[in-house]
Picture 1 (cartoon, rainbow, N blue to C red):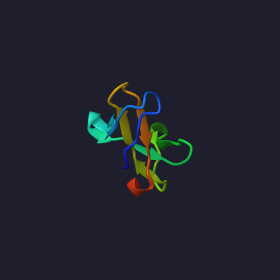
Picture 2: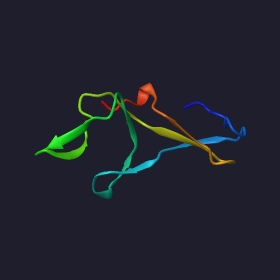
Picture 3: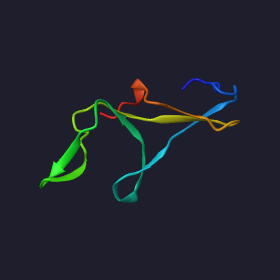
Length: 81
């Protein structure tokens, strides 16, 4: 990703990612899913969100080294499926 200045203070933005503590508290990179959230059912009980057959992208987050502002991006080149 090209160098980006902070929109709030003009500081330097450094790339990183936000850790998602989803399944069994296993650390994973956050990703963006297209469409409205739809709950999945198993034996009539809610079993999480359905993401099958939807576009997914890894989320890259930039953090300002001066003020701490976070900006998240789901870039076309980071498509998961």
